[in-house]
Amino acid sequence: MQQEQPIIVGLDIGTTKIAAIAGRKNEFGKLEILGFGRANSNGVQHGMVLNIDQTIKAIQTALERCMESNPTLEIHEVYVGIAGQHIKSLQTRGDIVRQNIEDEISQEEIDRLVADQYRTYIPLGDQIIDVIPQQFTVDNHPNIPNPIGYSGVKVGANFHIITGDKNAIRNINRSVEKSGLKTKDLVLQPLASAAAVMSEQDLEAGVAIVDIGGGTTDLAVFSEGVLKYTAVIPFGGENITNDIKLGLGVLRTQAEAMKVQFGSALSDQTKANTFITIPGLRGMAPKEIAVKNLANIIQARMSEIMDFVTYHLKQVGLDSRSLNGGIILTGGGSQLKHLLQLTEFLTGLNARIGYPNEHLSGDHLDELAKPMYSTCIGLILKGYNDYENKFKPTLEEEAFENKRKRVLHTADVNINIETPVLETPIDDGVKKEETKTIGPRKKTLKEFLDSIKTDIINLFQEEDDKNFEELKNQ
Image 1: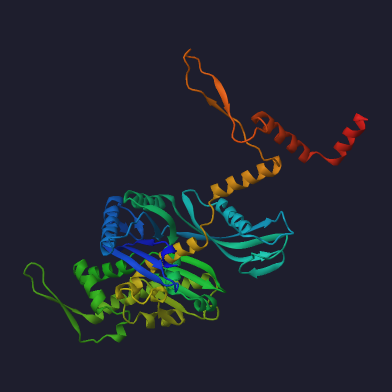
Image 2: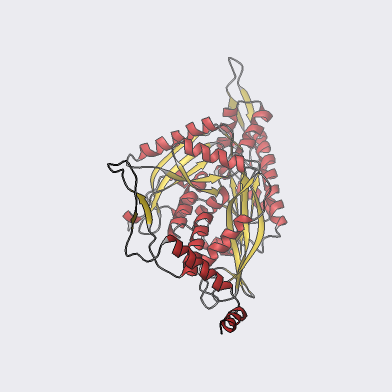
């Protein structure tokens, strides 16, 4: 069974790092990591690709390191995470009246209902990234998680539609393609992170996933078993680093190192008489920085981020009663000391750190169990979800298939069409036409089209018209 499972690669294009992870499910349904590579990200700011050339180099470096870790790997297509301030979401409603009400609701009808939402009006310059069904209704029966197998006249659903800026999406796709890869799908980063750190119990209880990345903090809220809300907060770990750099007058690399080693999200939990010694620049005297001052700067920015989280939760009317699972913090920024206490104090909800190790097999690298790789692990899980659902058809495929079925149903014939083929030139230099028949000759192309025309006319002819024709012939 293990050999039958495909190898799926997740590519996380972040503000501070680009990570590529290749994985495959084993016989127990756990992910075995087959390759891992990462590189510093230089062309991305606040989750958006700005410098395509630098982003391409970083992607190629991450891929090379991933394939160096496993020389047998061949990577051609990837699932890519997307985030940034340009991401927006909206709620819509869709319904269809079923044609064959005697049959049970099929997956094909659900796919058509979802496909209709891609025609939703969105502002100029935006593009639909994903359409996520929430709760379905069949006739007058609401809150149905999966309507397949039900029977009814009308089926509908509420949808959560995620959109993004076309140029930002194009830059991501272009960077991936110029790196020699194909983008299998774009996945919103908080949804990928949620897949990696959230269990079925969390989904039932209701949780808010807060993914604190380098350039943005992404929010995904689940309640009553479905996705209720998504949002992107335009602050992340890079903002904290810049605040430290400006507030304490140090280099950016020094600010990042102090944040990771000595940083705390609660200044009250730090000792007042503890100092960090920073080497002086070009012969200048070393600088001493109080750890409490460092914590004050971090706490101010993290409090701002959590205030945004609280604001968004209030926007959708969700509180501790509907989010029994509390808040799950993940992403690189979630590893700050005392962040759980600050989060619980400001939001009034229980909080915990979300690690992606629940879906990993036991022999994985300890490095990959860190919250900063939640998005990448979640992208692989998203790929397996698509694989197990046999990849839902695109709009173009669906339209073609429906058109083909209508033509076959209307014609109600099964014939082979004669195809005229030009013969090769003969000695007299004149080309002759011959007919190449596939199978027994039934009808010519003209006869076939005439039969369709006749069937369509009969299809729309009223019964009274038929009676009138019979009387006229008598």
